Amino acid sequence: MLAYNNRKTLSMNSARRWLQQRVLSPIVDCSYIVMSLLFLWGFPRWYERFTEWHYRRQARHYDQSVIALEGARYAQALEAGLQALSVQPKRILDVNTGTGFVAQKLLVLFPEAKIVATDLSEAMLTQARQRSPHIEFVRADTGKLPFADESFDLVTLHNGPPYLAEMARVLRPKGQMLIAFTSGARVPRPLLHRWLSVARRFGQVEWRCVGDGLWVLVTKATPTNHDT
Ligand SMILES: C[S@@+](CC[C@H](N)C(=O)[O-])C[C@H]1O[C@@H](n2cnc3c(N)ncnc32)[C@H](O)[C@@H]1O
Image 1 (cartoon, rainbow, N blue to C red):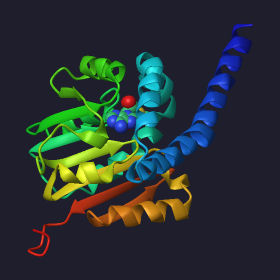
Image 2 (cartoon, helix red, strand yellow; image 1 turned 135 degrees about the horizontal axis):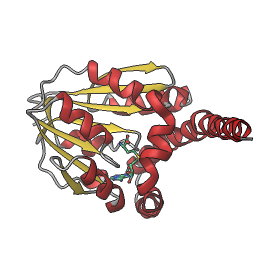
Image 3 (spheres, rainbow, N blue to C red; image 1 turned 60 degrees about the vertical axis):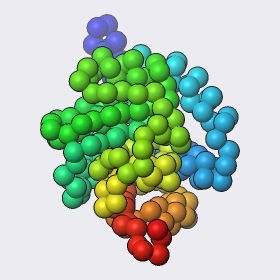
């Protein structure tokens, strides 16, 4: 009976993992790209309200129900993207930090850097503060960051809608922004290429698919005399 129950639990976990990896994550990644385009085209309000409501419900279980369930796949593309960085950052901003998963990784990689991490959801930030008491967590909408222009060397975003213009604004020239998605390789190509062409407005773009995931690295252009 015990063996039967164990087998049943195992197959339920595999089914949940399959659903998460093959169905939910790709849909969510596509919707992030669509959302970021919608933002660029001017429809921010209703999305913010939905986000706060959604993550208030998820926050306490996010690490178990999403990060642990995805396993190594969760950060596969993110980690590959981190290896492609060429900046040695002194000031780092992790936007849409959620429960602080990426901010904690950055702290290990760049122990000397000042790390600030932001999110719209206070419930997610509460979990993040418990994970990493030494990181400064600030409630902020990535579309309206409360930081001066050019104040960070590196801006990171993992699994969230990328507000490229605002992320680029707070990045210093030649600074880098790294955007990674767990299952971004499944984003339809026309949509991805449209979005990459928008990213090229902000600097030089490098990108790779890694397994099911995707990373995009933008090195911010230096202003020319013509721009100033
Ligand atoms: C899928 S979670 C990812 C969290 C984290 N980056 C990770 O990889 O574990 C997306 C997060 O983005 C946040 N978010 C969504 N839209 C946002 C916005 N406009 N400004 C700030 N945070 C936002 C949500 O509150 C949520 O915590």
